Length: 285
Ligand SMILES: Nc1ncnc2c1ncn2[C@@H]1O[C@H](COP(=O)(O)OP(=O)(O)OP(=O)(O)O)[C@@H](O)[C@H]1O
Ligand SMILES: [Mg+2]
Image (cartoon, rainbow, N blue to C red; front, side, top):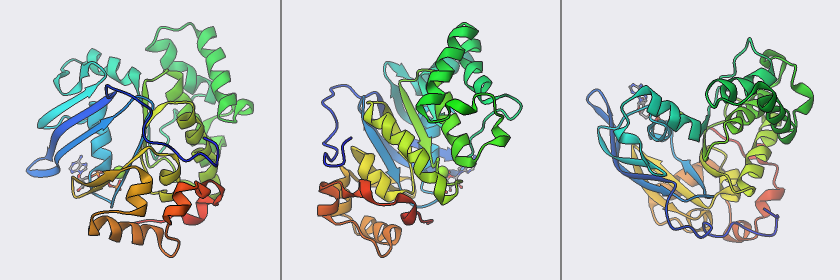
């Protein structure tokens, strides 16, 4: 996305790629998601923001079938995730939905290249040669072409996270979920990971981000969702949510999140955010 071209509303799409309807999720007797409904359109970048414990990670886990809600419907394309029963069905779903975590979860005993080759060969039935060619291309894409032979322990956190993103891409997913992928990184390496996500978004990859990087979320997202205590408090395009939140709770959260550097409507609509050093604005709730 060029710096002068703020994200327009979601690219014209008719049928959501992900659809959640009235999701209720409990752990034991504690309900942590209280009726969440949400659509993600193909090519859309949707960011979920909200305080710790509000259910953001649980929501992502429901989309991949890692958690099963007690009530509600979840669709990814034509697949009703809430109705899946067999392991083979979940494996098929996870081939289509990439998931990148805060802790990179790379295989420490495998080289960077083999981290990217393993699943395409074992799960997707690609030949090793094909998978290696693709892995080299993906490593180039995330700026790590020279690290193919390295082991994860020899890389910085930011480099490991970029490998984790390349590994998710190696499965050629229909969408990628990112759960606070910069939270464990040094401030200097946050930007390099955000750049990779920004490029994916610009290439039209459907992305759902859980993030505390408010300025990045404002810049890269078509749609922002603010959650608290298992409910969606407010949702809308970043310009509206940051510029003119309707809920007092959203205003309070954003005030705290942005500290003494509030986003102005003009800032958002002119996309000046691109020029800001994002890592200066990291914060923890
Ligand atoms: N496996 C679990 N068993 C019991 N309770 C859980 C489990 N996983 C999450 N919870 C609870 O569910 C609620 C939502 O947790 P979740 O991890 O989804 O929040 P979050 O918004 O991702 O928080 P954070 O920003 O800290 O990552 C929390 O109260 C948490 O303690
Ligand atoms: Mg979380």
